[in-house]
Image 1: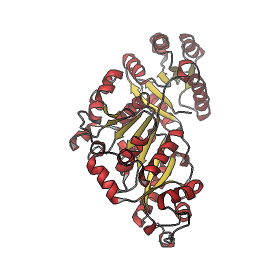
Image 2: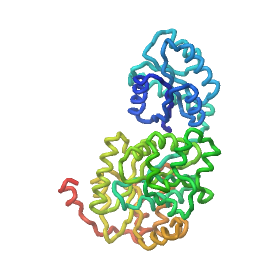
Image 3: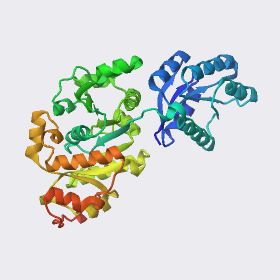
Length: 408
């Protein structure tokens, strides 16, 4: 089930905070926008097409609120309307329901009541035009340290996807995705932010850079200072719009846990965590997994991919997996010259040399991502190792006891 998305209307700071905190603390929900006026809410719902809109009510404004509910129900029938209030008088609840609200939520929120409301919103979203609404998968490619090959892998993964795919470069101050794809970009993520309030289908399409029939790009800002214009709430809203236009959205993420990156990670359906099999790589991956745990991400949202795999620096996979507490879903072999040729040519390796061992493995991972079927390496190891190294036997292991003994 896709996450439920919400737009909130409230002039009461306390009520807004209550609703926002309740939703952000619940798995499977996203707050896309907070509005101060009915006109702004209608514009945001029309543009963002959220699962539901929450309107906080005050008895003294009940008639205006009831008229707003009626108008929203008529204008955006595909969005569930939820009213919320600290006043639970029968007249307020009954009036909102007669106006067309689908649910009523008492404030401050009660976890059990909130869960019941969310279940009913899910049922609403599973019917009629909501069930046919296109929502693409959002995948983040991330590493706990720089130099792990995130941009190369993310670019090639996007190029290998069998669906209509958008690559979004969120390395806002030093993104290279455009050069990896060999395209000249006129617009960047900054242009989406500057035009956020009027991003209809036509404008959105005009700001995206096409690369091939199945792949398009949203580039990082051309100037480092432009990154300062991009806020976490901008990223949340714009990524949501992208998932309505593309089957798959791949995020090339920086290796820092800054507010924009966390906002993007909060949005994704899955994280591909890049690991290089060396002490810094294993340490940074372990550290990233701990941060994900603290952020409340379920472990089934995270998949670890080994990059620059080489038999000369091999490690026993089960020891790496045991140390990280995660199964590995991919082994991308090391071939420095092929990778650099691809980068210098500005052509993804999966296109310039599709029969190479790197390309074969990335295409296999892309197929798994597209099918949402992330089998661990243990289930495909013999086949993968045979295709990469041309043999089935295990290779010499580098013991990881020095890592665990030192508390890494």
